[in-house]
Image (cartoon, rainbow, N blue to C red; front, side, top):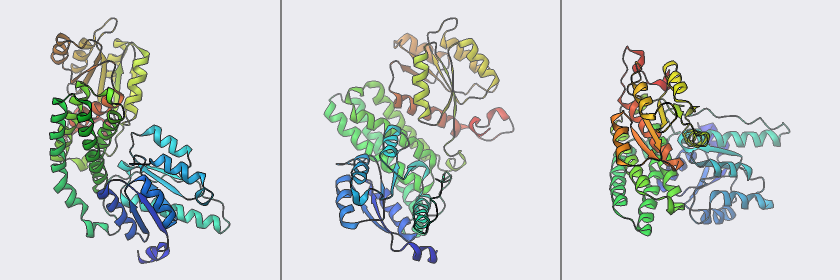
Length: 415
């Protein structure tokens, strides 16, 4: 450790992150790994600090106040002095379009916060500097190396002793979740857009901080749920017309579920990190199938899309799925009937079923509940709302399951 710290002690890093708690955790870890680290909290301050500090590498979030991460990256690549400055993007998994834009704008590496505890970030920085040294010595640049996904947080090169992030997280996170519950209850009560946006912005900042600190302590299930919720809140904040009674209820449900996750502290470590859940999507409309597939892929679901309900039932009897999303009106068999048939298959009774339909009346909602449906979602739907709902139902089901001798009760994503 001493030799590594000495090797990199002259390397200056600029870290641009608007969440102070998360930023300081990463800052301490990088400093303990031997780097000099300047932390700033918004894009405008980041650009000013870049000129003053002249760093050897920049680490930045994409969602920043005043100037976005993509704008910073574009500016750096347009200047002769910073055209080749290494830049690592550390951001939200659900900002796929912005990540693609960052890659096109010249980011050296894009890392997902949910998969990047401080030790992994420090390793990424070391690899970039090691590659620079190899090129300077006349060797060809190394091929890009995919860093292994982090499963459980264990060490941040000495930062634990000073910050004790694990203790701080489990002490503060439940209070943050309770506060978000209160904000969500207020959101449901009001219909004035300015007031709604204030509450949504507040919740967005809270989920951003919760996701970042959960990453540091290895609570990957909390990170995954919080980042999905943050992405949905960001979408509502940027497009207020999408705020509705449905999206407000979903925000409230997500806040409640975050509290549930935190209450299951002892169960979280046994949940598979970033599992690729399997979903069966049944709808006779190909465009709806494409939309649902797109929404679920953002949460790493593997989807089997089927237009025919009879073929879907056959798929379900022969394959293991974690979730089913079913249209109500289909030729030959209603979605309600398909749901009942699915739940009659041995070992499939507890598979959550979400109904998609344009029939948003009381009668169909009652029939949804009577047939065993876990959720009733009206078309057209917000992509991130569906993503959040799918994650909630699948993760809640996995938390309820306890290991048994019966294979049918083992979490399907772990088979």
